[in-house]
Amino acid sequence: SQKIEQNSEALNIQEGKTATLTCNYTNYSPAYLQWYRQDPGRGPVFLLLIRENEKEKRKERLKVTFDTTLKQSLFHITASQPADSATYLCALDRGNKLVFGAGTILRVKS
Amino acid sequence: KAGVTQTPRYLIKTRGQQVTLSCSPISGHRSVSWYQQTPGQGLQFLFEYFSETQRNKGNFPGRFSGRQFSNSRSEMNVSTLELGDSALYLCASSLVLAGDTDTQYFGPGTRLTVL
Image (cartoon, rainbow over all chains, first blue to last red):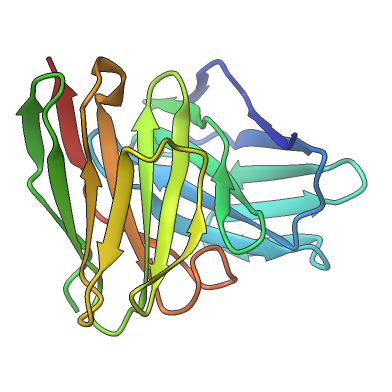
């Protein structure tokens, strides 16, 4: 069955550094992948979508890469700030529905 | 434009009871999806409705059901509640089919606690 893996441990980084989060998947070839941010007690918020034929996508301080050979997506936040602290979820399309990873907690310390 | 709204925000029920949760999508959005989020299982897809029809369904028992009205508002119902049903229930709306390249907009969720 399809499996999505994100860093199970929280990622702690210093303010100003680049945070890199990983999303690996198996047994499927999604047409696209999405990244969401979720704050405690709130619903996820869409950040970026990258399609299978795109290698990289950028939005302000965010960058996503998609390697269909490695079956991996990397999510980067440059010049990280304490306000970036949240849980980040990757989601893959699975035939008209999204399948989410468990998420990675990011903590940015000042 | 108002976001996705869910009511109630918090709910406490006892085992065996049933519960109905409500979701109002963003105006103009015709697709509504429901998810269950728990610490152990993460975000899991329940079902998706489009134009009052259930288009996709996740792997949940028949105790979980839903419907969509002509104004795109949606409700989900859980009957014969179990302790394991305690979770954050999230609703998401999108312009077209959920999971398509269109963005999903999530509501704040309903926190259900089953005692």
